[in-house]
Image 1: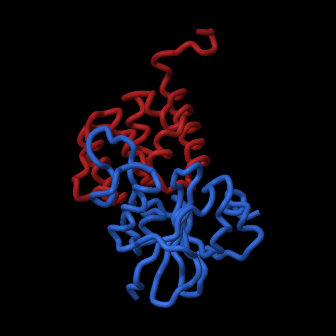
Image 2 (image 1 turned 135 degrees about the vertical axis):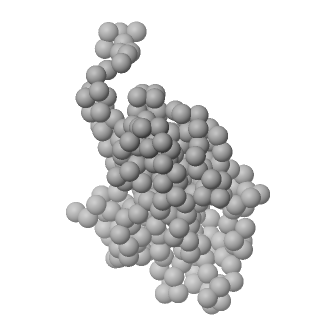
Image 3 (image 1 turned 90 degrees about the horizontal axis):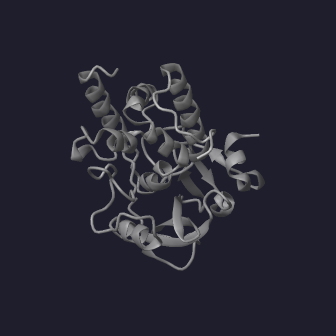
Length: 109
Length: 147
């Protein structure tokens, strides 16, 4: 592995925030026209956000509160949890509300 | 240049009308079956449970067979042409390399209406969305007109 490609652990919060913002913007620019969820969540920028791990969860929840965007797959993948009731599957405002309540209960928002 | 023309260059050579504001609450499949409260999509893999709505009995995958089966749950069956037919309504499934990417619904005028991912709804010519984004029209299906 080259020095440029070396994985850096625990970047400072501001760097993490900037990285998240950059990846989220790229993801939106390149997938906002897609209707199918699979290519949306397999997009490299989305996968890199998942790769940021638990540190990304507060940033994702912040974004979710502002945009109600499709972060549900990433949140499930990172946390191993799903607070969305099965009856609410696909109903984006309800899915977002369930995750935001989950985040508030844990002091992540 | 309109932002939709930038994404769908085919719109530039035909007339199109934006008919809604942007929303992430529903997608093209939902719009094609008159739903604006749900995102209808298969997902390749869900970490825990099915996150999105998809008709029971249809494979949860982006294949033309699975999308056809999902549309069959709403009463659609394949048909030969995209021509306007009295007493029927039609949907068109676009695909890129055999992978479904988008769906449009025919209006009573013969033009088509689409929800473009998380972007706006538009009224457009059938082939104006074809190209690198959505590929080409791969399937036409119809059902008796419900309205």
